[in-house]
Length: 86
Image (cartoon, rainbow, N blue to C red; front, side, top):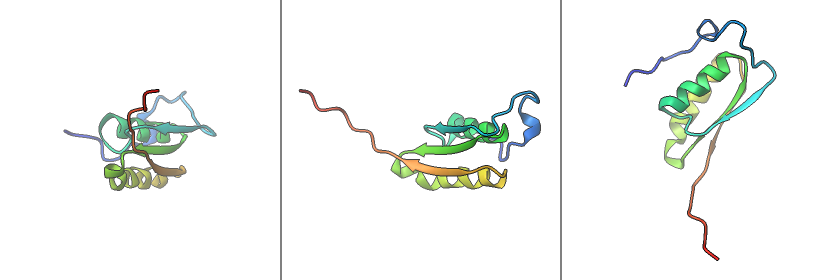
């Protein structure tokens, strides 16, 4: 699967600005989530990248790319478990 290695501000709609905004992207370590995280950052948002514990290394890589754009970014992990029945 081909994914853009780097998203620049020219890729985002010129009138679309997220400067001063924050976003949290679940599944942001790969695929569509990664593309969304990079595009939001290119539009000016600071982005938290969510992943499973096994994807934390890839999420950190996405965060590095976002920080290279001059935005703030952190990787967050979560483990999902079924809810207990009452």
